[in-house]
Length: 106
Length: 184
Image 1 (cartoon, rainbow over the protein chains, first blue to last red):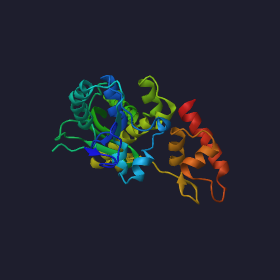
Image 2: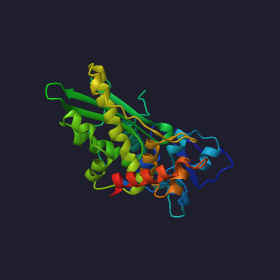
Image 3: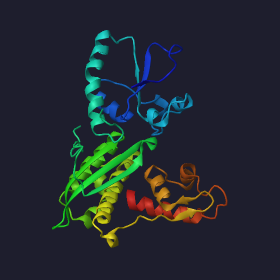
């Protein structure tokens, strides 16, 4: 798993991460089924299948950019929501990695 | 979302294997098959896919379609049939379903090669249409599947017909051919 972005000069309310062997849209849809809304890019680029040009410009390799998701917090989010995501996310990532050509079990 | 026939066995004894696409492009698919040698049919088809939900769903439904099918019939399964079995895909997602059957054809060809039936291997040869930018008919087909509907969009996607312009007529013709093939 990789953190995408500047370690300190970044917004506290948004998080962009990539998971090895998992593609962004498949993560988004599985999370959506659990009631968790994330994005794979900015709203203005949602029609595009290309990896984020912003991530690419910051030097993120293309395969990592394809597998990135962004989680943003709003004023309505609570610590409970965070716990809920942390509870659901590992299972989803495992499921996607399990059928991915890009992940080797260690 | 419960994809079927995912390859989970590290020691799967396949008769044919096909791997297409790559992770840099956003989709990669691996298809392995077991062949019933007496009947000449696909006895089992398993897969792995790195890609979006449409890509995963396409490979899953394709594996279901071709299991039990004669090899020559399975070779003909195309994106149209896969999309229909899925209850259709949005236009800009059609290209996701192209890789699944391409991987299957690679697996069938691999089986023919492994069993010494070289005369049955069908090569998917491509023809260069735009000589300046080295763009093939396959790339034009991919661009159409990816949403190109006009010559301008085709030029944007493939960079074809942007130098000498001699292939413009061919481009327009192929555009119509592939539109008819995939979207009519």
